[in-house]
Length: 423
Image (cartoon, rainbow, N blue to C red):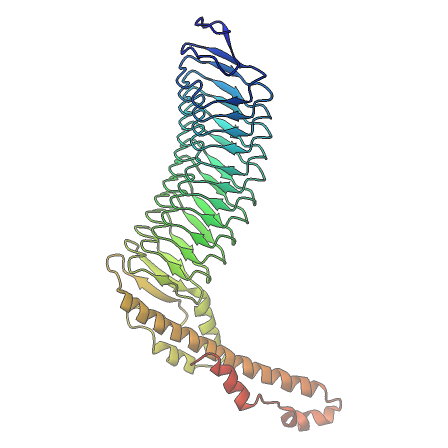
């Protein structure tokens, strides 16, 4: 039955011509697939009842149904096609049941009234399905989800928090771009890749912790996160990409794991409050403009403590050796202080200058390791000496045997150990 009267129910069996002024639709139990664009631009359609047995909702099937307020998918539906409910601007409630496998790109794009969505456990990948859902506040992701693809929640500006389970391995490009209300992001172990622009312009995010399973942060991933104050990067990360933390103007300090080999161009560009970049003993490869616009310095507190320890242990010539490579304007240190490399916010180093700096810094690290090893062999000798003294039972023989108990690590062995440092 079809009707142009808004109070009547239109029973859709799969072959009828759809009147554009239809308001209520029941899908007949014989229908397994709703074809492409079937109800597109039925702007007065307010209610749709989907039947058990329905399997697929085709591309643009209900696109631009601007009066539709509610949709419940039966558990038999496995596929929601691309743009199926795009531009349903009054759609407030969407119920996705177990059994759903695929949600197509832009399926709920521009559903401006949608406030909450729960993904069933049968959905393992979410594409660009909820872009521009500007009132979407709550997203419940299941524990089987593996990939959040490009643009999945782009410009969902009312979204306040997101928690990813350990099953999620990839966050696609622009996945949460311009989610300006997003204040809390929880990324769990298992995540491998953070895509380009993934959290760009998430202006309310204050803290982010990347798990050790993330090896690469792609370009612009956190660009313009202007409230970001705390970033925790774990061992395992290898590369920070182009402009990754550009214009994160609330960031004051960051610790770079020793596993990071490279920081791309503009990696921390215009982080105007970034005062300190903390490294271990590894100076990563950086572009000459990585820290442009940042009044920062790279510091090495752990390396500084190690240097102080070997000087206090009596290896005083270590101080003189190390100073040969410092205090030339680009590597700074004074007794009791921290080894640091100032980065002029206005000037940038050429690649040649940076490579020379890395060479001299590398030599400092080698000297510190050399004296640590030298001190270690001395302590090893003392430990062996004490062990032999402890074996002497007769008290009268202790003083006589002290020199006889002394044990020396042979010179060739010491040399072989120290030569491993390639000095």
